[in-house]
Length: 264
Image (cartoon, rainbow, N blue to C red; front, side):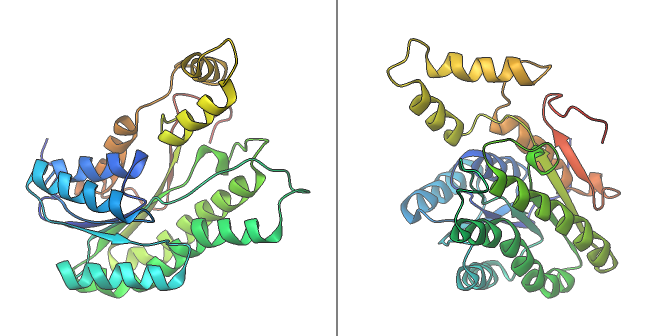
């Protein structure tokens, strides 16, 4: 199916592994040129080079921590320098961790707020005039099922992702008049390197394997009974970036194997 996004330019934060990498490859397969950023410069440069070679698209790689305003500014500036701007923005960078509300220091709340919320705010303000000059654009925020159905061990993540979901709705209402569509994807269990790392840590020295640990999580929580691959999730991101999703505005789409336990 021709999605109508060939030769568009996409910016992807956290684009060097996991979901961000899968989305980058999915878009590149459709002929989209890429500006990728991540904190690990060596890895993001390598990924950008591999994608360019594999798919024949143009790519740039920028070392950036998008929780910092100056790095957001630099990523946008480097993208403008290389491509004249971008038509698609994927706010993907994020992190999680275990804590309680009583234990989490103010610094952690601020760190997650800057990474999950303020990065999206700053990118939106910078990209609006650029996208308007290019005739419009698409913004997709990688939120989480935790924005609606919180996990008990990471309240800071839950709260900041819920705020990102609300920001998505507000931004969509404000930006649609500029022909900029904004949506969110609330993913469920996606088999990312972070899940594997955590599973290996928790099963070290135990009788069970990390694979069986993750298999049990999937069976306990999802009707489908398994994790999704990042590539399965990326297909939906790519669709939302295309004109085929032209009537999709301000929505949060659950890609969760049936994990959400309420009608939403």
